[in-house]
Length: 110
View 1 (cartoon, helix red, strand yellow):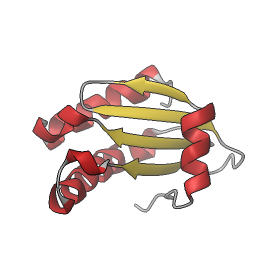
View 2 (cartoon, rainbow, N blue to C red):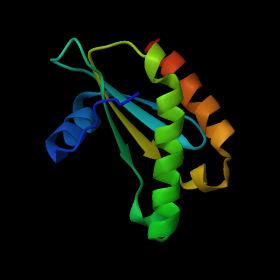
View 3 (tube, one colour):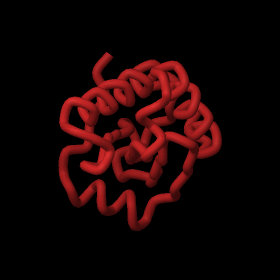
């Protein structure tokens, strides 16, 4: 199942500045109510200080997979930015999925 992805920098910045942030050990999630009520847009970011390109892409793939599992249950009409924190590198894919599930529950996105 394909989901809409954020690609424009201004949407990332809007989520950071005006959105509500939720933090766990390995992930941070910024949630902002979007204009489009039919779709939820999501963006993934991994900072350069998390490792080399191979590690950053691996983390991004693992975050996308965790979101893909939760996507059918997420409410529509939001802009979500998922950020990898420093300790994200040591978590397994299952642990990342559990953390993302907990953050979405805190944000009332289900």
